[in-house]
Amino acid sequence: AALAVEGRVETLMAGSLRKDELLAAVLAVPALHTKRCLSHVFRFEVPTYAKPLWLTDAVLHARPTLAEKADIAGNAIELARIMGVSTPRVAVLSAAEEIDAGVPSTIDAAALCKMADCGQIEGGLVDGPLAFDSAVSMPSAHAKHPNSPVAGQADVLLAPDLEAASMLARQLQYLAGATASGLIMGARVPITLVTHRQDTATAYLASAVLAKRVAHRYRLVRP
Image (tube, rainbow, N blue to C red; front, side, top):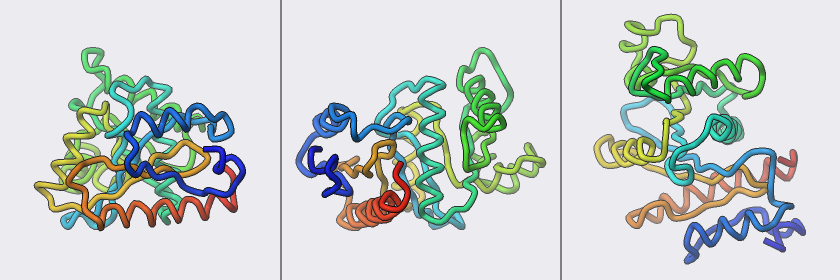
């Protein structure tokens, strides 16, 4: 952490450290903090989807608050933009697609959309609540959300909580044949860590490439 503060380290990698040990070290150094909270962003290459799919947050936030979800969305948008997506389309996922007081994630989705309209979430298009099929399937989007700028063509999937995100991540890998990489965003340096014991060398390498791209961007524009 001290080296990162002095600018001689551009990425952090967990290695043999546990996740909580690495993050505690990051949080203990104010110079590594940004205006956003830390959050993890997966990048999936899904054989049946025409473009990379980003999923957040399946690692850090068990039950994120609305404010944390806004930061989580901002972190994912930032990473997708660094990787070449000019205006990421963010689908705020929920089990219901109408505002329902009995389904809290629909309330958060509506609030996040309003925050995006007001400029509190910048750089992407945000829509929700959307079910998974509405987010990634054009037939479902045409049937249920024909006027949505996000439905059917989402770049980013913002899950309602860690449990939903983690299950979706493993389903994409084990049932859809997706390959995964990812980073923790929200610090002044990108952070990589092991998210699954069965992660392959290819996943580690892909995550390192993501970190390198982000580090290069941060040399030009300080987060």
